[in-house]
Amino acid sequence: MSAGNLSLVFADTNAMSGIREVQGHLVDRSARGFRVLHEFPGLTCGQMVQFSLPGSSAGRARVVWTHIAAGRVESGFLIVG
Image 1 (cartoon, helix red, strand yellow):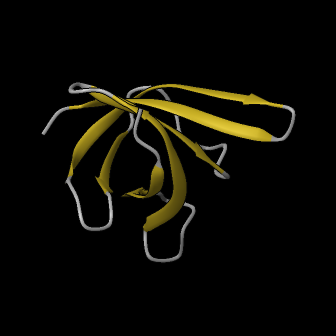
Image 2: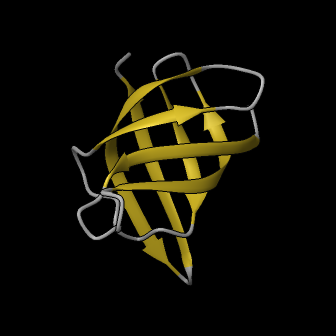
């Protein structure tokens, strides 16, 4: 299990610049995907994001699911490039 800070960047028509950056905490990672705790409940299934781990990997991923419960937001991602 890998843990650490993660940055997610994606298109968002509600953001003034049209782009939103969300900071999160990497909970789990595999060769094909990862799971992140964050504070943005607006990520939707199928949405594409750019991700980067400080001093590590970066790429593109697709949101597979977002779960909101007890004030926590957690999303699962499939790495696509």
